Image (tube, rainbow, N blue to C red; front, side):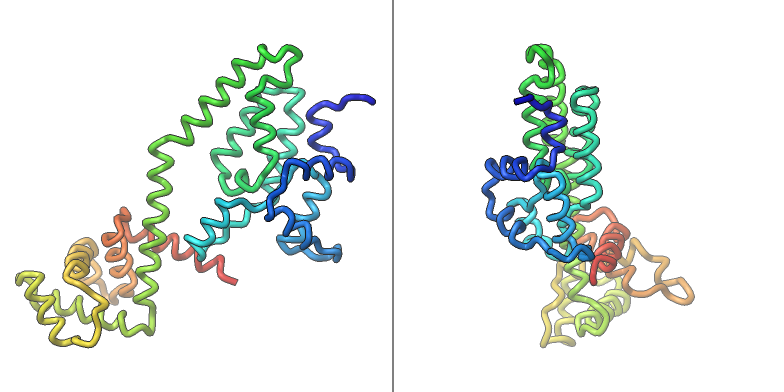
Length: 286
């Protein structure tokens, strides 16, 4: 029997290949997806497309992971489904290059891992491909692949452990938490009215201690504890940051001040970052 190259095996679409691909993938997520395959050729839903790609390219092995489930639970307002076109594009590019130009294939895989974390996390073939590079394939003599393997390994872990990456993740979660804070003060909520009144109290009693102003506010609103002394501190700082808000004619919406307040409270650089995330989340809603 003729031995196939890695590129031929990773791209083949025979039933035997599908069976082989599933041998080392026993995840319940993959099994659930296989049971959800749609038979309607006109079905373009995510699940149907996912099943179609897995049937056509069994070695691509697209499936949900524990990380995706964790993020969906922690940040339910964001879609954690991968862009299937991106998944397929990188798979085919790597498949084309691995035998022709292994160094370029390694670079493609690193780019996929760095810039498309959701998509690469869903792509089971990435584990196989990374192992292929790190074990010295596709050289005739495996030691010849050591420089490429060492470069790939070092580049991957340098990026994965980079403080810059960790800070980016921290900023995202801070922005998401700030966005949830804004949900408390959405239009029509009584808390939004309380926020406006807090702003008025801070302006009316400007110069007094925050504790004194908050005590006066509490006396006027004994039934609600949606704001605290610390919140008054953040509101006061937000007011100074958007001081033009008070002289503009007509005045911008109070949402500008609320965004700055939420950003200050949750350690986000600016209210703009919070509103940008809020806008993206709104576009994702069905």
